[in-house]
Length: 389
Image (tube, rainbow, N blue to C red; front, side, top):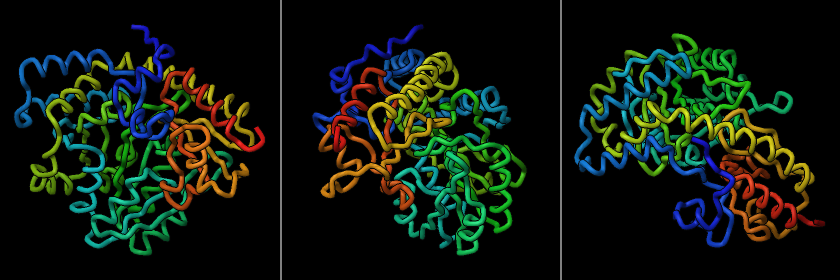
């Protein structure tokens, strides 16, 4: 089926009522990580069938098992990762997985080690669970962000217990390579640490790159990692409330046997069904979306060069999020941040990089999972708002 993504209008998107297009009235939505491309037909069909039979009770074991099997087959086919379906467990969302990792799978009272810039809730959830956060700014290797292994080592030495690893990375779009993750695992293992691996954007990787699950890198990584993922980003299902926690170590399996019933509570029936349909029958739709997103990330480079002088942008290796560097753009002194400036002067709602940690000051996270005509209009509006335009 050929998708006509270019034909979707802002009026239609606002009529759907999603947060991206209704949270800031009258503004172009480019902040929250939702896509503007609708839903894969196999998912819609599966949900209609579930509604028709009234699948609204507590989550049946068979329904959860079907999702676990679908994910295991997806992981084997897409990532060459052999996962026992019995190790794949439903949770409400990836944040629920992080909360479980903090409360039950890391040393009590230990700090959370957070490479920054980072996904915004990663800066607040650990605090809500009584944990200190040690921000570890990512380093640069040319135009690529990379892990600073010395700084990571120092963070664990300073009391760090749980590393939050995001791959593909939100907001910078890096897709980590096997050698990088093996080096990270050595640091973690040296300190007896743990890893929470957020791989929610794993299906969204562009040509020239490949997603490798962190837990698959070596035995040490498998034993110290709790992996969380979901179909929610790649198939646009965040409101369905379902993610997967994948276990890969015997000690963690024991913990889940005693705690799992409550940890899994909150995954919604329809979300589990939608995730199952995504993994088992949504591949063709996803390939069309990825092809379109690949065109968008490349077109965005041309638009930034044309309309946003002084802004730096490196096309991401994965995700549909662009990390725009406004630090060399001279904005009015009255502008609290580039994001505030763009909202007030260009009517474009983006995510303030400062919300992603200290390393995000002066940056803007821009969501390019939108029809290309809308993206072109958005960047042109941002350019017209810049001083001297």
